[in-house]
Image (cartoon, rainbow, N blue to C red; front, side):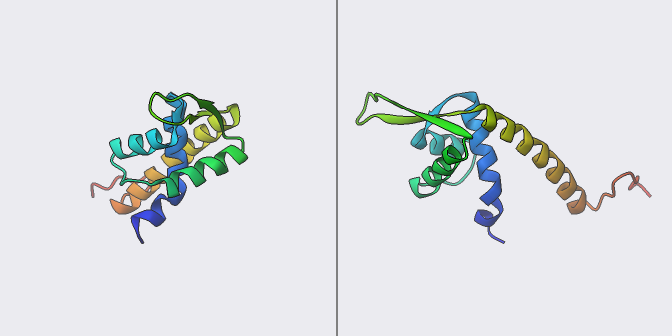
Length: 114
């Protein structure tokens, strides 16, 4: 399984988490993901996700003047987006915990020090 396949569902949650801290425009979002260690995501990946999230009313956008070039579309979370992020974080904690147990051969509720 490729990293891209694994990232498919996770990327939405990461994007919501970044937008929660501060409204951002698409290219800035790609830069932030790269700062966190993700491979470069081009406009072909980021913008369709943002458009879908906007249709689902998870994010909203505002056009603003830019100091360099045309106006930029800044994205921020809606209340529905904040709820989706909270739910994603719960699902992520659950999955991460269980996957780590499997990888380390640790059984829930058992002491592995036999």
